[in-house]
Amino acid sequence: MKKEDIYFLSACNIIDLIKRQEISAVEITEAFIERIEKINPKINAYCTPTFDMAREQAKNADDAVKNSKKISTLNGVPTSIKDLTAVKGVRTTFGSKLYENHIPEEDDIAVKRLKDAGCVILGKTNTPEFGHQAITDNLIFGKTNNPWNLDRTSGGSSGGAAAAVVSGLSPLAQGSDGGGSVRIPSCLCGAFGIKPTHGRIPHYPRIAMGFALLSDFGPIARYVEDAALMLDVMKQPYYADQEALPDQKISYYEGIKESPKKLKIGYSLSLGFCKNLDPEVRKNVVDSVHKFEKLGWIVEEAKIKLKNPEIAFGMNLVAPTLAFDLKAAYNKQQDILSPNLVKIIEMGLNQKATDYISGLATRKKMYEKLLKFFKGYDLLITPTTAVPAFKHGIMYPEKIDGRSASPLSWMSFTYPFNMTGLPAASIPAGWSTEGLPIGMQIVGSKYDDLKVLQVSKAFEELAPWQDKKPKLD
Image 1: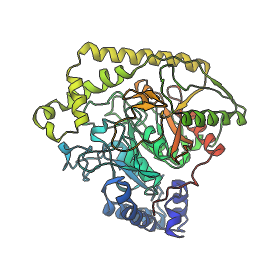
Image 2: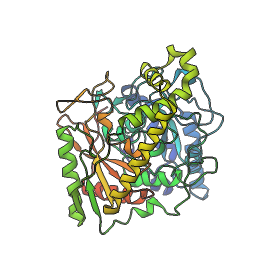
Image 3: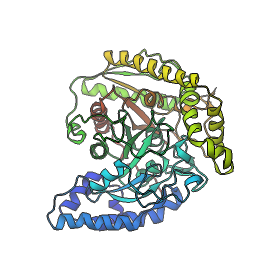
Image 4: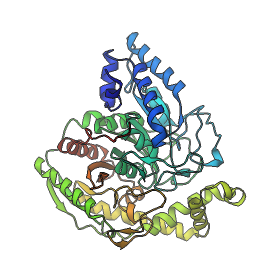
């Protein structure tokens, strides 16, 4: 097999090839290492490679096959770990100069599960400082570029993770999502990414309170079945995470082999408050959602009206928790913090306890509103972002379709589902005239992760995208 054929294989194909000893895990790993050394300087997806670790894990994967040992779920599959997630003995900076030389003494439980499943960890991927923004740039490693246009953002905060997958630098990537941070870069880079129901994947240890009630780990991949398999490995409860959910005792990987016979899908292009939407995004999402009618499913535009939660999310919930975590650093080491993060901390320090409670109240009301929506529909579909990837150098587009836009307008479709904890995925749904990916968001009711994956798989079969690859060589 040629090396160039390896880079865009699915994880499931890699597992099968290694199991049948048609190619070794070591050969797979060396091919990806070579690719990373060649392509990563253009993309800046990986910030800390772990090639020695990867080679050892690949050798162990081959030994398991040769010695007829029990083969782990992801035996020999390369993956990356976001730099917000602890990996024992590996530099983990959280994108911050405060932790520039931090070496964790234990794995996050999700990382341990990936290791135990036989994953080959190629390295840590780039992220903004503490994941505070939806573009990937920081004062240690700089910005991550979009694989389709190096002058555009990869999104964030899992921008390095999504860019790595789409660039053929790993078939799988671990991300985290506190306001859209798996779905936004998956959308802008052209990958599949899912944020499961809050608590589905446990997170321990946490170093701080920022995004604690909002954030979840999630897989990013080129293929839905690969993401389902990775999610199977990372889920399950864990006693040390009080937010962790009980096990549903189902396999998402097996579950997506079946497609629902009847579904009623409601789609919204505004959620009742999003006033800014790029016309190309609108057209691609509408065209895409109606493809489900080929399966006999009911598709209709839903009359859903949520109250704009921008202040509740950004000012009342996110800013105070980041300010709580970083007050001491703000007072003593402000010069090494990201300027945008400093602004958020200052905003948080000016919030009152009643402001935070107001944010929680908005979160509760929004969940109850969506609860009523899901009594009439099986799924909700929206655009993932209001625009395709925009140019580096700005935090957000100030105008969308000629209208003035607020700082969170371009990502208004993602963070409501962090506030409500509902499962949501982004799947490629077309291309702009500039050749940039457009994403469609698929949202399920609480605990309905499997249905989101089943519908994502159905759409992947209706409109596959994997044959299109960025020109980076």
